[in-house]
Amino acid sequence: MGSKNKLKRFRENETFSNVIQPSREDLVNGDFALKGHWNKNFFHNDNPIILELGCGKGEYTVALAKNNPNINYIGVDIKGARFWRGAKTAVEENLNNVAFIRSQIELVEYLFGAEEILEIWITFPDPQIKFKRTKHRLTNLEFLNRYKKILHDDGFIHLKTDSEFMHGYTLGLLHGLNWEICYANHHIYRNEGSPKEATSIQTFYEKQYLEQHKPITYLKFKPKECRI
Image 1 (cartoon, rainbow, N blue to C red):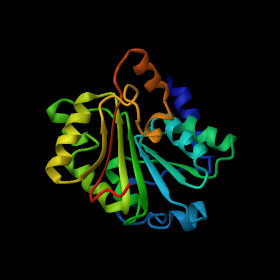
Image 2 (cartoon, rainbow, N blue to C red):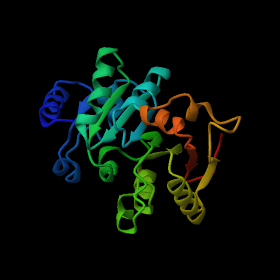
Image 3 (cartoon, rainbow, N blue to C red):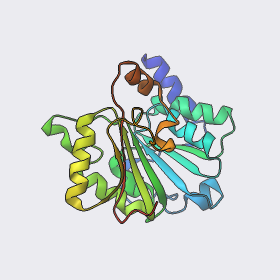
């Protein structure tokens, strides 16, 4: 993407009412007014809130919102030029249950209050295979502890990835932490009975992976005992 296109998208994001771009300073200093008040001050309803972390183009967030109009969805990504597409689609289609936040995911606990989030989706994250990159892996111990702070007591986390490494790494970490693994599948499109919530939406890249015959793995887990 050229720099002109990026600048154009950045400017257009500033006009979208569904895009929030807090500064790192405001978040860390506790000056982000929506933290703990998303339902009352942004969505203006009491519906559950579900996050997609590392939302990319926002297509998964938007598709979830279309399928579930009584749930609020928020996509989080540091690259605003990417989620511009999702934000624009949501505006064009009058989807009032969608928002996008331009922020680093490591700041997620400054964006949301305790138990404010019902579910978290992590879709096709960079597996960060090299050891020196483990601090950026979205299911490492530090990130899981951040998610735990904002997740509702009955909430879940979903990991959908084409990386068998990421799937196995996360599974092993969850076992070590005694987190509850509610569902685990190494190839959700090969096995019958896979949850519809994991198979009903396919991103552009996911379709490409499937065309390449790459297995798509899925985990559903939570810090406490599963009640499903």
